[in-house]
Length: 132
Image 1 (cartoon, rainbow, N blue to C red):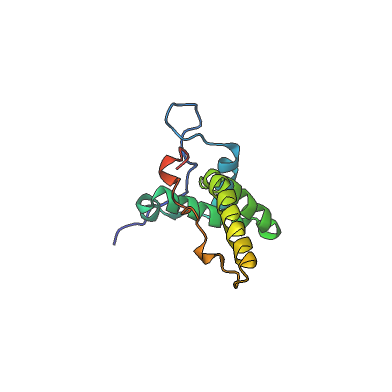
Image 2: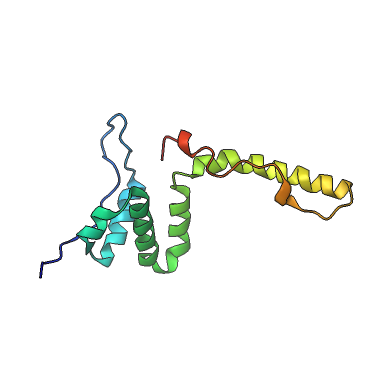
């Protein structure tokens, strides 16, 4: 039998302005501190997680700990997601494309179907996003 080591998720990045390192905001520090009130996790699990898996665990623990304010925690987690800038670019373009497709269907007196609208894949800008 070997003893199981436990640890707490840590904030992402380095709090100093180091070139190339992700910046740790107060939001991430608060999210991590609140989520860590649930107790430690097995250190082996923490070490095996990818950064996105670790972020997901921290988000889930933060939301669970917030109680009645869970919707606020979900909003914070959504707005601090690295994918938000991509969605702000792709979302309006895809919306206009779907609207144009729907209007065309109305003019042609066809059943409205936006599934055949020209859209940009949601992961198309991920390689160019510096936050990922």
